[in-house]
Amino acid sequence: MQAVLVIAHRQPEQIIALAKKLVPTFKVFIHFDTKMKVTPSQLEELDKLGVYHFSKINVRWGGWSIGQVAVDLFKIALKDPRITHFHLISGQDWPTKPPKEIANYFENNDHIYMTYFRANQKVKSGEKVIWWQKYYFPYDHLNRRTTFGKIYHRITLYGQMLLRVNKLKKLGFQDNKIYSGENWVDLPRDATEYAINYFESHPNLRKMLVTGAFSDEFWLPMIFCNNAQLKKRIVQNIHRYIVWEKRYGSRPAILDETDLSLIQAGDYFWARKVVFGISDKLVEGLSK
Image 1 (cartoon, rainbow, N blue to C red):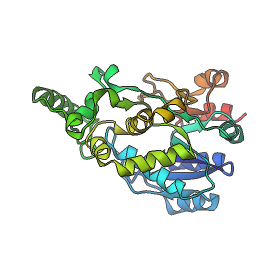
Image 2 (cartoon, rainbow, N blue to C red):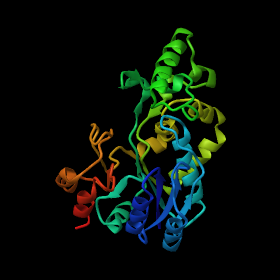
Image 3 (cartoon, rainbow, N blue to C red):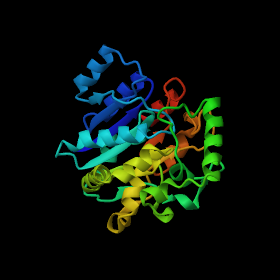
């Protein structure tokens, strides 16, 4: 048995449709952002499908909250000893192949499917990625996407530079040991157990993540890439079709029917971002 763990933040009707697509091939676990409005009848529909769902965390963009959702999903799913693999996806992901074909690919497969890079060797949005963990950011309590949040980010970033703040040194981390990547992963059980046990037993790692920015992209790369044996098992092809450009007011792009041929020609298991009302023809094409 394999599990799909879903981090959902909008369109509960799409989440239900996704669950129907995945069940019974996968056991499905869903966290609903506490800001979502999910009706009792929608929850009842998920119950009838045998889907485990809960709503615990107010997810804030740029904060650790989305990483904590992932941790909670893994911990809950690990309670079922029958589950051999765990697939972490967004509620805006959609399978590009039949669920059984996806599951078959991972059977008897002990690879860790995850992207990673050294944080001190990459720049994003004009900022060194390592800055997001070197300095302190309160984005679980402050909306980073507002005008105020953007101004605050610049002021606090350069202010900490001037003051020579170095949270990593304080917590005992070396710059070349800080890794980042994408939040979306496919993990075998032993690697998942190792990651959760490591996370729970290393308080300084948790302190780093809780006070950093975009920390959901750091925790698993940090854990796996600093273990020589596990790092050897990492495959950086995460089989996800993502268009890193702005479309329909979103980056990454919201996908539509123009992406269908590229998805079908590529080595993908999931398409992201899919939004009902915009991506309907794409979803229909992927179902044929």
